[in-house]
Amino acid sequence: MTNRLREWVLILSIGFGVFGNLVGGYEFDETEYHFNTTETLSLLEASSAAAAPKPLLVGLTLIPGAAAKGAVCLDGTLPGYHLHRGFESGSNSWLIQLEGGGWCNTIRSCVYRKTTRRGSSNRFEKQLAFTGILSNKAEENPDFFNWNRVKVRYCDGASFAGDSEDKANDLQFRGQKIWLAAMEELMSQGMRNADQALLSGCSAGGLASILHCDEFHSLFSGSTKVKCLADAGMFMDAVDVSGGHTLRNMYEGVVTLQGVAKNLSPTCLNQLNPTSCFFPQHVVPNIKTPMFILNAAYDSWQVLSSLSAPSADPSGVWKACQKNPGNCSPSQMNYLQDFRNQMLDALKGFSKSTQNGLFVNSCFAHCQTERQDTWFADDSPVINNKAIALAVGDWFFDRSSVKETDCPYPCDKSCHNLLFR
Image (cartoon, rainbow, N blue to C red; front, side, top):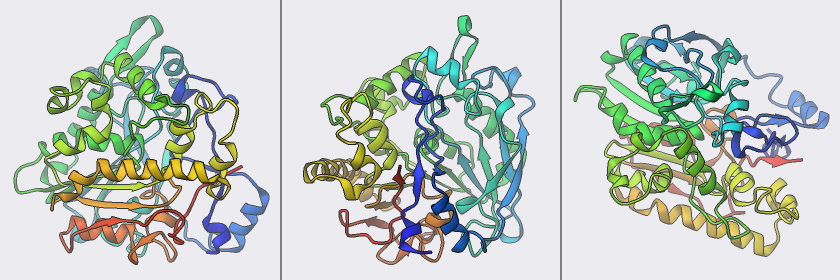
């Protein structure tokens, strides 16, 4: 793959689902990006994409007994998951991937969200491609390819953590109950007999992996090896470019509207308010289960939608920098370097624990476990010559300690930076 392809030219569909503002009529989805130019598509066809094997497609299963437990999507439909069975040595190993897809923080944004696949199983894809950490090919996923691999669909809008309702607007905020129903269903499908289990998630699903990690561990007997992985889930309580708190304000709406507080860490709540305890920097220090944090130091979703969101940058001073880090002014780059330092400082105590793992690369990226090109490929991102898939495997199987922190931008030439037009 060429360097030109490595820096994917992508378009970000920002919309109603995150901040309650309809921008261009699209639902915002922080885990998906779309090619924007014919030139890029032709480059892909000429390079690796045309020769790439077709990914495994895995069918949807709805959870039949969920409604009786009150475990329903925003619109009252059944939650669901996609399961591909393990085989051979992985038959009794389970990997659970919690889907991401933003949050809704107002009645208006949640009413819109329930008309999309992020709020209604009526809109779920009937099949999903299993790539990256979900791949069933050893050459694409060396340590987890033959495990039981599950993608739990996300249709509540609060990282599987809410428990409330708004009858006037026909909204069910039942993320916590969906989480419990999904785990009960998977235990009945054989997960209760797991020799080893890994709870994972990307973005809003990465945050969910952090929030539910110890709860996941408690499902199993002491003989099961249980760990958790959060990919792009380290959402920071940072000051935006205007001096405000865009993400904190949004999270406050999510926590209040969806009744999240009762499901947050009691240890954290003894010291901080519920909104603060929805931020992972205040949760990870108290997690007892071994955890791996994978994050881009300049997380592209946070740069665009938290640090320099339109509300924080109404004059568009950051637009060029948002699209390509090469366009950032010295002062903008200093601001982004400070953001990186805040993330690393927040993880200092976490990284000191011998049971935890860390991989923070200095890329402008978001979600690196689900995409094959960033998880494990010939030119996937590396730190000290170690790809993400190998770092996670080394940590999970205790082959070596993994505490990888990259040098600051622009030193890492292996990044698959997300560029926008």
